[in-house]
Image (cartoon, rainbow, N blue to C red; front, side):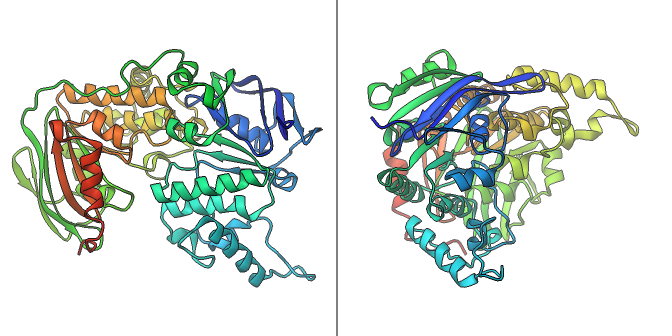
Length: 502
């Protein structure tokens, strides 16, 4: 096999109170897709940020094309041919697609003036290679999250990179966009580019990669050839145990109806949506990106204003609430985008947990910090959150630990109905299993739970009943033996030609 194009040797990186990387060694060869996997907080993203020049290692060496190098910043990494495609979007929403793709490297003429024609032409070529449906002149802020992710990935086409790092690239992509991404990655392989692929999705790992390196608690647990191992063995390396029961369905008795929705409609988003959910029940929503699932629950929570429809809450008809009224009723919404909608990133975990419920922690005009700290400690232990303390900014935590603080924020209010929109997006298998168990425990305690998931095995594995949505309409309801992947696929695929909700 070819010699590595890139080698990380004995990389160590510490933060206050935390050893993020402990003598980590890793390499990638030309034309190889090398997976880097591990639980949230294992050190994957930290290692790649060292490689991309965002962090400087405390010890160890980076060998690139056979020579020791020092990478001082992301621009220096890109000039060397090392490109990091971020998990969290790093785009400027007010700039165009073309301006974002070439940000920091806009083409200029001899006088230093931006060459807009070349910028647009080169960006269009990168977008065409990705099969994107939007253009170089579109403003990034007007694109969906999935489309913005495609802009990030288009940078791999735009620059002559020798090493490209993909950090959870499919987290916001549809199946069609994922297929196009895989085509792009295989094209880069044929060009001799070394690919580092970070993902929690085992099906992607085994479909795409040549080798797998596993990190746990900042240390390498081993490197294996993909075709010579399986998901069970990799999972055991990641979490130190096997997942005996990956999905945990609540064994609960359904009791009184908590919420009934009738004829809920929002023009251009969804139409004539009706359903109910009971105490002790987990109700799943499945559909493709753009089906209208998130828009429905955001309307229930008062974030969007419906055109028509009625709600019955614990048997009594109520007006469509505002978010404050929804919280006061006992609704909780864990949103899809934890960083944009779920957290105040520069605040600590304690402040994020108690933020929606400040009145409960105030003595007249003074906050009861002891009571806040007790709540923080309770949910830190209950959800196994890895943090150095209550003041650590949540922006410095792994995605899985951030998601757990969003859950803690709502659980401490004692809700009657909790809505979980893509609750395990971007989370490792160990944390996913813990959240699946938490969902079951909430239902067994008598809460009504709504789970929205784009992962079909997940929504089938945790739900008692599943509603299928396509293009803004409910197209199927399944329970018991009818809850199969075949039925969900059939329901969704046979309704994709219908007109959008009016």
